[in-house]
Amino acid sequence: MGNGRFAPSPSGDLHLGNLRTALLAWLFARRTGRGFLLRIEDLDRVRPGAAAQQLADLTAIGLDWDRPVVRQSERSELYDTAITRLTEAGLTYECFCTRREIQQAASAPHGPMGAYPGTCRDLTDGARATRRAEGRPAALRLRSAVSDFEITDELHGVYRGAVDDLVLRRGDGMPAYNLAVVVDDADQGIDQVVRGDDLLSSTPRQAYLATLLGLPVPHYAHVPLVLNTAGQRLAKRDGAVTLGDRLALGETPEQVMSLLAGSLGYRATTAAELIRQFRPERLVREPWTLDPDRLVATTPGP
Image (cartoon, rainbow, N blue to C red; front, top):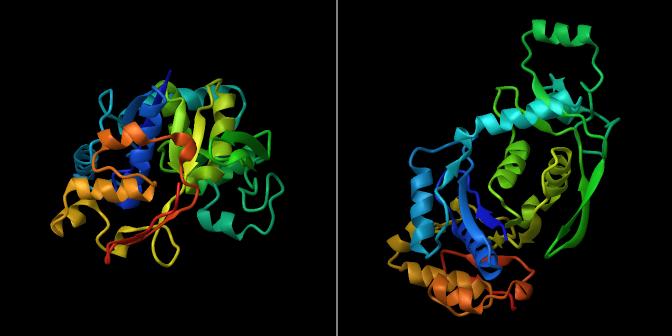
């Protein structure tokens, strides 16, 4: 049996939605006899001290993990090796498009609408040289052979989503998220990925990339999000939504755990109590709507 994982970005404190997803990833892994790992995805925006606080909050609600935490910023050699393999197989090309140029593209000659339009896919050597001479930074994209790919999700069933020429290395030289997450999951023996269902649409890209690299495709479970009262994904601006906020209001970690457990249809004040009750097949399929300022949660049934 492999491992499950939680992989936060250290851009700030985890809010109740993040903590709920982390709890679900831990529950799925532990309940199915898997290990559970933590990975800090710090290739983008990093707030000093955020990673340490995130780990402290996860520990406070009773989650544990089985190996030392890894950080993407320390794994560049793995990403470079994967990109080299794809390049040597003729599966990459340089892209000089700005974000605005991509957004303004009227149509997509390669791939579905809304995907990268393939502007730089067939540039001549001369055209590439011209763009370099103009000082335009080049990202590296995958030369995809498909426009969609099918995955199977434990909650959503068979799902077919768009695949375009996704970025592998950004114009600033940093590896892109979609590449890093695929390489990391395979390297860490992750065979179960439990995360928010807002990421479902990006999963076919990642699964396709894994197959190109000869890597196993994990089992997926994209779980419902936590929403605010306006029906939008919960954010820190929505009020007292972090563990630190709740503790400052006089609550205990056990009370916060009780709130999270209740959102899943269970009664428990600790992770250890909840794991004895949790059944993945009974997971609620609707988002959890939360009013943090009134301590009122609309809890879906099991």
